[in-house]
Image (cartoon, rainbow, N blue to C red; front, side):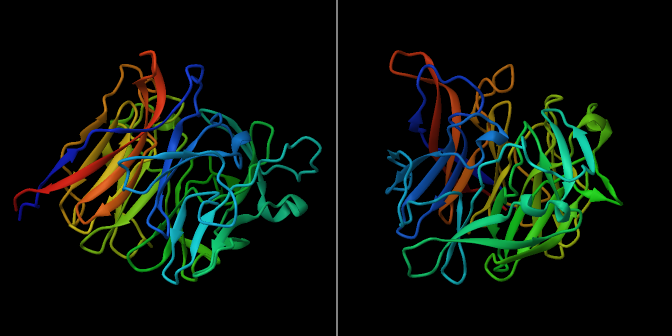
Length: 396
């Protein structure tokens, strides 16, 4: 049976926040996140510092919308004991709590008494030195979260128990970053998933390739355990740089209408443009199919399954695209729809780190960066944008 098809319609983009004419470096006005607060307000956060481990835990840019993204108000450094205090992107849990992960500022490694390293990796962007987490002593940084209990107004800081085999801490750029959940998703089975792409200790040695690591919590984020992983398994015939890649990174996952789980992840790195891969699980994420090519590009892929049965994937670099499927198994995908036209050289158009948020059964909001939006004097400026993505039914 031929899967249903659909048509994607993009509304006109809305400017959320625009950088000054002097902001040109990589990192500021990039890397968007979206969430809906308990009062219905849409919160958009974005990076305003350099793209560096030294920027972890520093201030973010914030904007809020009370009309599902039609208009926005910028708020500088929101704080206090209300929903505005959001160190990270939040999840509304089944018990009514709100949970956000929070990254600590990365302490300088100078003067720290660190144990003997267990290995090093000269990755395509940075050089990493790794340490056994159980040997870090006083320098074992916690997995830190903030929780807003249901019906309360005060956020509570807490440290979660996160366990998976081969867990390491590392130093990079002369700092010691704290561990953090790069993504959290409330899944269709009511569990909370954390998405990771760590270098791990395997058979006593640091695996030089990152892998997709899924963590799962069934107690609303207090404890996390391993729930399946996808080691680096490239298709050399599809990527001549496969052997040089850093591995699989930046995963996202969603439950499809048929009950399977679909995952999408990145290989593009400092070696150059690389394909995105996908994998599917039919046992709730415990085991995964052999990864296959999803597209010839794709950083920070973002997945959203709408209640109408259509799943959206947002990804890019160069350019930014939304690609839909109405196939409940996720095996067949339609052609991608352009959000930001690709430049000839990647990185000159958008960072392609976008975020999707459902607005209705057949509509979503996408937030993203566009580096070529004219400023007050007509010169291009780095700009945070938002626009609606509407799904119109096709045929069966």
